[in-house]
Length: 262
Ligand code: MN
Image 1 (cartoon, rainbow, N blue to C red):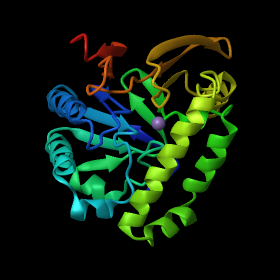
Image 2: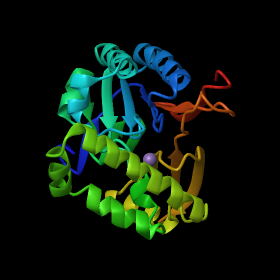
Image 3: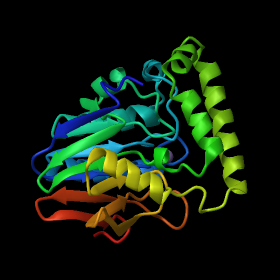
């Protein structure tokens, strides 16, 4: 909600690690533990650690920090410890788009723009959460327009914290109920939207999360090879356990599976 700009370029020399869709919440302690252990290693290995969205399963406003339960205090202190050792960046997902400057400061992190043009060792890479590419899901896109409107968010923040927590719960239940009726194809990215977005930014590499379908897609864009990397989601509290990350350095992009210990 406090992105400096919708789109901006970020200079990221060196090694970058990325993870998204960890969906941290009170009811997933094993996922939190796995994430904090990974983050500790990431802070050692990477010059920049980027978390482009749905880090939290819900975030109703930074004033949560004043009444943070223990599980959340642990997460924030883990993020802050990492943020003091590496450059840490938090991005907005469709669950935690209300993350603001106060949280970023508490984590010694910076907020990513909604569309981040990463200036990396292998050229410019576009980083998004990914929900904006799911254009076949019209109901979702309509809802997204509402909740990403600064006026709607300001109105939300005038409500009490308990009221916001209740609203977030309702939205989550609606989203879960909606998903049951939607086909897998509707909830994936639209290839046309992918290509238009990449063309608009003049990039041939795109990284995003959101769809929980980790993969590397190679295709042709304006007669040249292009690739789209999809980050995995994390869950170490339900079977099958899953989680992983991407690394980006002068050798290129690589996917790593936490379960496989790769
Ligand atoms: Mn998402």
